[in-house]
Amino acid sequence: MKIPLFTWLFLIPFLTIFFGVNVFLVSGQCRKDQQSLLLQLKNSLEFDRSVSAKLVKWNSTSDCCEWPGITCDEGSGRVISLDLSFESITGGLDDSSGLFSLQFLHSLNLSFNSFSTALPVGFANLTDLISLNLSSAGFTGQIPNDISKLTKLVSLDLSANSFLGGPPLKLEQPNLATLVQNLTHLTELLLDGVNISAHGNDWCKALSSSLPNLKVLSMSNCYLSGPLDVSLAKLQSLSIIRLSGNNLSTPVPEFLANYSKLTALQLSSCQLNGIFPQAIFQVPTLEILDLSYNEFLQGSFPEFHQNLSLRTLLLSNSIFSGTLPQSIGELEKLSRIELAGNNFTGPIPNSMANLTQLFYLDLSSNKFTGTLPSFRKSKNLTYVDVYHNQLTGEIPSSHWEGLRSLTYVDLRNNAFNGSIPSSLFAIPPLQKIQLSNNRFGGQIPEFPNVSSSLFGYPGFEQQQIRRSDSQFCLWSCKTQCPRTFIQ
Image 1 (spheres, rainbow, N blue to C red):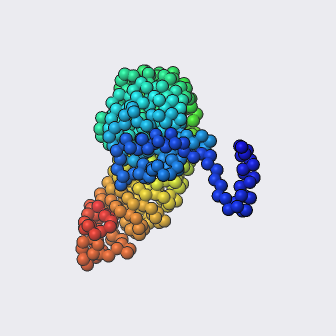
Image 2: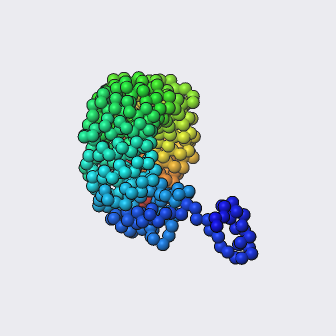
Image 3: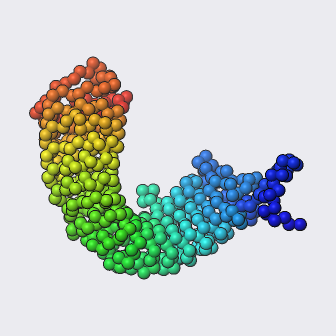
């Protein structure tokens, strides 16, 4: 006789109290066929047991829905998610693997392993996949056309970290257009490090014609060329655009300012040229802008207004010029500024003292003039570099008070004068101060809580600074010294 479930739920408390019966509901337990396939997969893989946090705990005596890296459907007990990232897996993965019989998988993550083989065509069997992450998994060679059969995919990540070495994945036959033509549900496409070698008109049109819902486009270091075709303007859902490390050799198009949801635009080392559109700085949703290492890219800052979202602004080693507007202080979320190696002139605005979220500031190798503003309100500041500018005046000790996270300060090659700020030397985590080629005078400040023996000079005493050159290479720390204070 079958007892309805609601009746069992009503009877459980009474059975437990009066008869001492232990009753368990088994809904969601792993099915035997699913457990068998997972164990078959484990036995076919080579992995480092001393590093493994998931596979090493899989065994036949426990419910596979409880295994690390496994998620089951509560109703059917079928495995719907498999995460074997960072499992130190080496060797191959062939088409007969039990993995490719787990046909109810919605999510598969094999990232950051070392398979070092071609991508198996067996992935085409996993037709229910919504998310496939094979980033930095060690697969090599041509991406098979079978991936294009996964028509339910919403997120596809085949990216590889170029710093890890090894031959990259490539898209030749099929090419990018063939790969994505059936993946019309994709919202995230990450192919960083894949050798695509496509012309701008081709890859731009392939994306815009097949992926209308694309939100994340990440194709850094893919051997792409320009131009950035106007067809990309159709992808109005784009939020993240990462194309760094490609030889685009093109101006930055104005239409990028029309993406109403854009949060990140990363175009570093792309051989960009022409004048950068100021309107892009003022996209309300933009949080990250990286244009660094584009030595032919010109531009200047507009007036900023409140309610902008910029957090990271990277323009190093381009040829931006002009002044920093006082309105830069309106960017209250700004936390990282890198403007090194440009042609900026004029003073560093005092309004930058209002950037309370700032933790990294690099204004080196420009032509800034005037005095250095205080950054006392930037309590999280860790790095300050104003090397090789034309800054002058005294630096009050009060400028550095309360900065308890500061680790690096470079004030070299300016024309600062007066005394060295004593508060700098009272910051516990400070590791390096560079002050040479200025006009400081007076004595080197005391070093609180640091004995003279740590500098390798027993009996070290304060030394008078030579005003003529202010070269602060007065000692070298030995290995026991926790901080290299002055150069």
